[in-house]
Image (cartoon, rainbow, N blue to C red; front, side, top):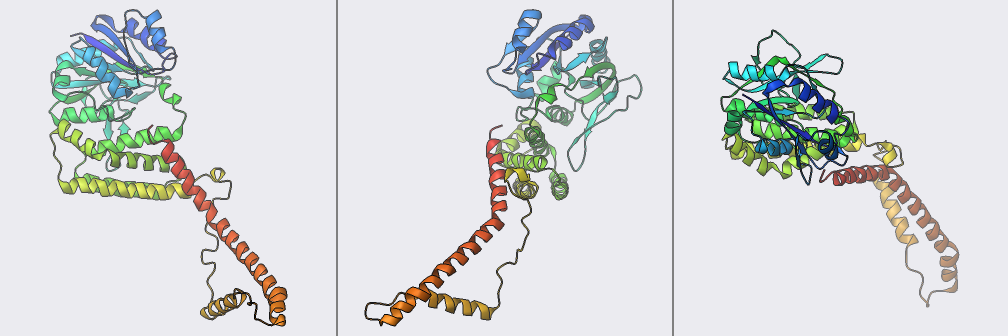
Amino acid sequence: MRASVVIPVWNGVSDLPGCLDALYAHSGDGLLEVICVDNASRDESAALITDRYPSVRLLRQPVNLGFAGGVNVGVDAARGDVFVLLNQDTVVNPGWLGALIRALEENPEFGIAGCSILDPDGVVQHTGARITHPEAYGEHLVDVGGDHPRQVEYVTGAAFAIRRGTWDIVGRFDEGYYPVYYEESDYCYRARHKGVEIAYVPGARVTHTFTAGERVSDPITLHANHQRSRYRFVSKHFDSREISEFFEAEQAALENERYFAHAVARAIAARDTLRGLAGILDRRRMDLGDAITSVHRRQLQVGFTQVLRHSLSTSRKLCPSWSMGLSPSITRRQEMGKQSRTFVRWRQSLRQRIYAPPPDRSASFFRKLSWLLIRSPIRFLWDQVRLLRMMRRVDLILPEIYRRLYVLEVLTDYDYH
């Protein structure tokens, strides 16, 4: 059994030398080939691979296909008995590949195998993982346990081995998890749904530097990508009861949200999920053979609509004050302008007198003079008072207008991220 290692590459010029040098030094005879799928990198990643690693099969893409898309392209071209997916910011340890292949050869029930993931200080970060309920967050396990492979819910895509036979049964990665997050969770859930077991292999050790994620400097993009993938996973894999509990947990989380970027990211993700819900449910039917009911579909539509509305409301409350140039407080004097019924009637009568039409030509001289010297200046002053009151009311609502415009601008800016 020999392996094809597939590495999706995106702006990885600083990571690739460490990754590829260790890969060739520590993989042994089990390594058949290395395939790098360059997702339209804007740096010199492709040139580096071509110049320094001529044995690597480089597949250059015209656009960024995301992690799942890069994996699919690489596996389509692979010739090995096992496909090993590897992040560009990983450094494999000696004997890692032999341990993975041995686990698959000795345990035919395992169709997918994952590694011990270490941080740069050697601390164990991942020994398998699970999806929490009802929130649907990925939770990494850190219990190494014994030396033997053991069954887990899913393993991280940082270092992820798949039998060719498993790929034939489960199919390709779902490219709707774009650009990253939850692809490996989804794939392992699909595999388990079809009777394939997932293994964590303690002896396969890989160091993950976590430098690739640092290139996403925009927190809204980072969180929106994560939430969008999480919502897709829930829509594909949760049943009706789990979905009800999920939306309750999501509303509770929004009640306690304290960061604008997190709130508006949920709004972006909920909006995008609603737009693409039909396609997500079609993919659920294709991957799991699960045709959901109209009630289940409506449950998702209503739930994500509520999340969108609540997220927008929370985003306006948390909108940064620098975005509007005004204090974010808009709760001053909400009951302003309430007067007694008697005063309102008196004011209407006075306004009718002040705005009465000017006297016609047949009016007496003193009436014309009275209108010119008394009523006309009073009308002018009354107009100024009304203008000042109107400006004051504008000052009260202007912060809310700025909030709404800023949130709308953010949503528009991230419409096609």
